[in-house]
Image 1: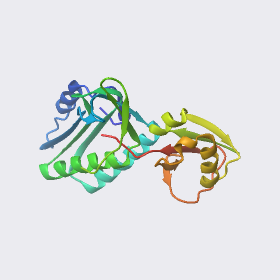
Image 2: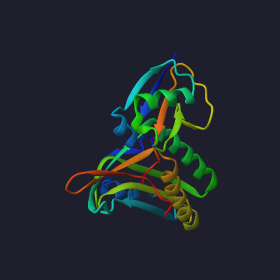
Image 3: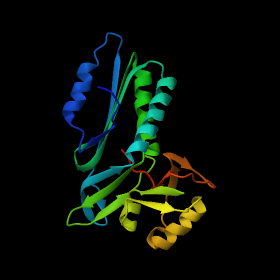
Image 4: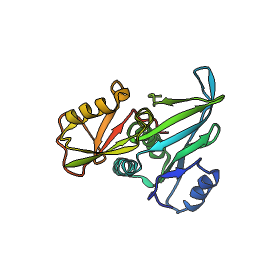
Length: 146
Length: 77
């Protein structure tokens, strides 16, 4: 599978994770590292979050993600595969909204690359979230550095 | 001379628009002045501006057909 379209409608299916693991079976790979972002049921304005409605500037997501891919591939020369999917639309709490997968020869670069890709996604991708609350109402939230 | 303006996140909710075409707006300053008059609710909101999908700062002169996006703070992941 390729990174032609990063955005996926609705939650990340768990089957996608196992498909990527299964197809990454070259004899030169010794490390696969994965990050899965999950929707929390935070309490905002005294109400529980039921789901998040993600929206994105899709054309700019493509250009920014290509910059991130180019950056990590030049910085981490041991990587052989980088794969990213981010949700748009509604994702319920407990479901996954971000999937980052890298594979390479050895573990060190795989660990570091996943962390850097997730940080860059949060900083650079034009994506917004509207947190839908129980009993109605919603809150627009923005990323913090943690 | 005309430009397309895109609204995202909370800005689309407050303005009630996702996009509009504006004529005879030549730079960021005149764009903001136009927006504040049309959508006073977004005047005090935090956002950056992208021209043709690249974030810009300060004084930028628009060209005919430019795509101007108003980007509230990002919240991906």
